[in-house]
Length: 457
Image (tube, rainbow, N blue to C red):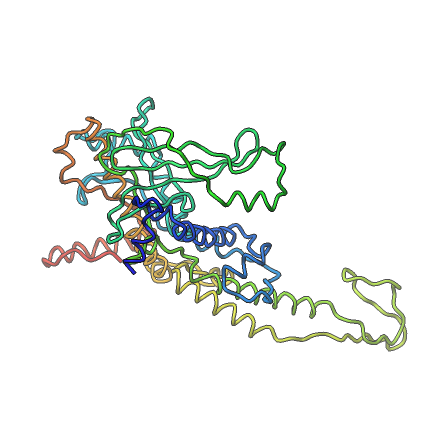
């Protein structure tokens, strides 16, 4: 296997060649982007409007028809988990037991980090970053030097489909460079490609190349033009710009990272068959209800009040002992409803996002904070897991920000040598005043008896 990789990494001229530029690397990228496109369609809600892509992405036979109804549980699951995990991020500490950094902090490094968080609106953008990672499995946080701005550093969020990286064949952690590549339409309406690469000491910019003719001069048919556009032309280096960071100025954020895997895993990777099954059952239930409600007139013993009937009228007849009979479909919908409930519970088991119907939630009545914590325990556990996975990478990026401040001469090096930025969060659930007093009473009794403080629920 290693021998085959070495063969693939050598060009026809015998010069070493990056794997992501080989035919195998491009094929892997196209396959990955196709999967990302499928997840995007589930999230946006138009996946069933593209039946060929839907069937191919899920491994269904071409004869399988998509459901008639789409309830966007994919958006609900992703948004709920992202917001519950990171909407409660309220600050950053330089050390686990330190104070939250602010513009009034004592040290230069803390004020520097607080200024970066304020000017870049870093905390408010955590939830969209997490949403991107949860949906597509990956996202890139890129640090940028903004010499003429209000603050010398800013950051950009690069979506999963727009970046790839070259690494050592033997070690995924040994990243050689990160490539950002995307297509766009220029002012003339031509489709063009942009590429740049992040190295440890420089940024390499390639010259943008057109992938199609402008809209007014396009001679090729649309289908043939699309096929030609898939062939990425050879891009020439336009310029190289040195940067002062001393390391690759980006952090790869992965969801559900796996050992030996280059990219993360989307939360929808295991859910699309369940989402399809839910919508199939919803469509089945809808059809059964429609058949039941739209009764078929069978026999009339009498005379109709109206000669023309529609489904908005109340049918009445007149005459002696007049009767009206219907032929109806009295299908039992309880098995379908039970199956839908089981599928929704399976979604909860896989993601941790609790799915409660409004009627059940209102029937519970007022609940204490402790009772809510029991009810939402799966979501709380899922949020803690995402704060470990995604939040850890976010904290690595803040460490990169501090290191960049040292390289720029804006932060004393001795202040950040032992620093380890960490996010702080507000309480996930609000407890009642009575519960707070009860807990405080327990803590006082524990302190008087010499015990340690009780663990948080």
